[in-house]
Image (cartoon, rainbow, N blue to C red; front, side, top):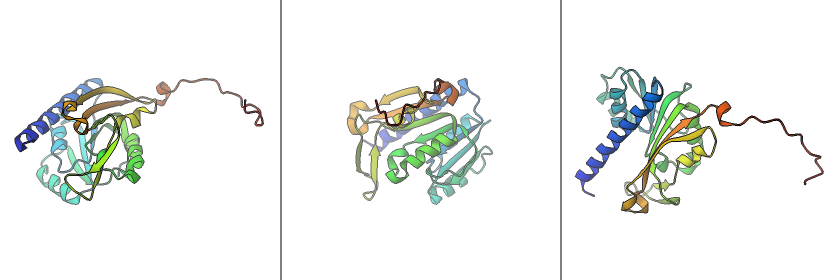
Length: 212
């Protein structure tokens, strides 16, 4: 693709994300937002503009990217950038929306489940995922860095494998470009444990020697 085409795709993705997040805001009051893997903070800045009443935090492991973001958005009173890792988020509180955009594919698998657990821990209402969504899980060498592997799979299914995460919105795009380009936007809604699990009477254990 040409550079112009890439920039157009990026612009459309940002516009789509803002539109969907505004849909979320009609369902619940948005007081705080966390953008995991925010890089230089371009998308995070959009969030701060569209949600001036909300506290917006961007976190990224790159000190250089966070330094750039802090300078670029230094006049935003509701926006903060922090150096941190997705597998060990430096927050005790929960967020109304947790943004995860093209992040999970880059994670070394040894940090994968720790990251999922951290997202689950800090997400109070919604998780927004924008990722590759192939029909079959795959791995390849990054075209940006030959020393890095990327991992593509339907990441939203990790969350919905438990009953307290449900699909609020789902959209697949770029499927016509081939399996490696197929991407998806997923908004997941977190339910209370009480509503997610059906209460039932306890079952008495059978005799330990009887396995029938």
